[in-house]
Image 1: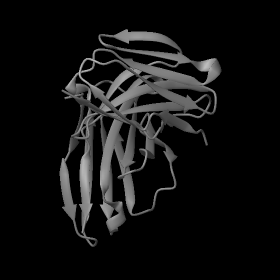
Image 2: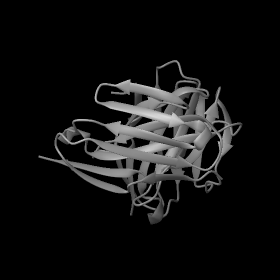
Image 3: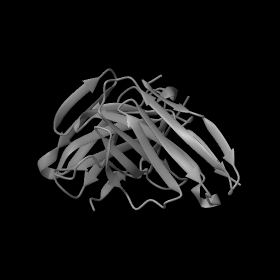
Image 4: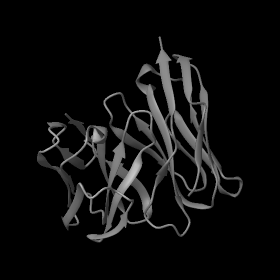
Length: 112
Length: 110
């Protein structure tokens, strides 16, 4: 365990479903991130929250909706996804811009 | 945006061999990290190294920020070193935006 916990580990959902990914950290970090990792592509930054405020939205479609209720929790709400959204979704946290990032184990999402 | 290039893209080693992985980046950075992703997808932070040299056991890393490259050295490789090694950088003044390279896929064989 890295100190960043993601649930669920695996998720299969239909295109009309609504689901949420959860990320939790108790490292005292104040920045949290969502990344997407598709096959044969570099990791892509989706969202950044710093001090619970969204500071980056990297041109992500509105069918992905993040939520950061406090500095320890981050959610990614999913609705009406497409098959091409199937990927590994990784959460990370850091102490703002100082030091390294800690990643969770990821949620492997399959959209059918 | 910043370009992050890693080489080689693929590497096969015999157990016990040494290797050097390279990361080139196209802009000034204030954050550079090396990660190892195991076959199950877990990303582990190996080094936070915006400049200088660090060592951790059989691994060491050197970043020459003025020349915009970083090197990761793996000595006496083991099968558990297999996986993908990523370099990731944040542009100076670019905020919390870690950009990843395409990675080096390493396989260590007996």
